[in-house]
Length: 108
Image (cartoon, rainbow, N blue to C red; front, side, top):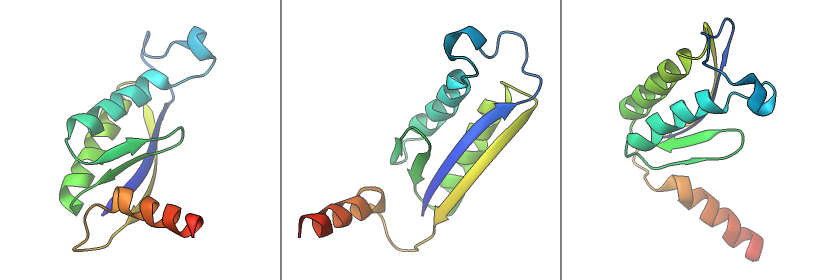
């Protein structure tokens, strides 16, 4: 499966958790904590400006999403999670395969 997800902390951040002077209301430190968890998982992944995508089996992907959510939780009293999943049993390499097929169709 491929999961695309986005996390953001809110509410009552512990002192020093967010740097309001860095980029206004930026949550880059919290997002970095989540992305670090994803990258340390060893599962295929990529991060864009809006989402992080991760590929693997259901249990391993969801465990990483949970751990990333917990990492963001350290930056506020609430965490917002947006998640979209492409569940396709028996397929691997789709994180790049889907994009490769799209690019081939655009080149045709």
